[in-house]
Image 1 (cartoon, rainbow, N blue to C red):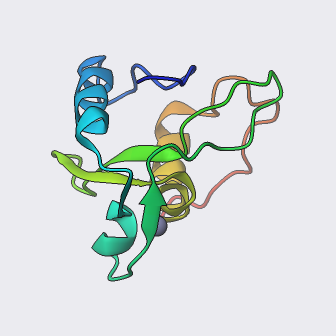
Image 2: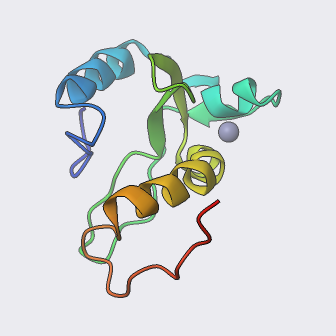
Length: 117
Ligand SMILES: [Zn+2]
């Protein structure tokens, strides 16, 4: 991924094949494209390939695009804006993840206890 540091190279579900797949898909991405997450939710939203998110506390700039996967976790739907993906996915996935794995690394306080629905 040219120009970006700190992009996730592994996760619970994907080993570093995710990073390789993302790099390959990113190379083929046009400058402007539809946000996959918004398209998935029936909206039209153009995203810019080289958009970045605000630097974190260490000044690391990351790509604002997420290589988005299907809700079923099988395969990818394409790139989407970090905010769109987070809004959609974190509300669904974060709760499930918190129940299963506990707080994120580096998180100071444990999340509030959640009802076990
Ligand atoms: Zn979007």
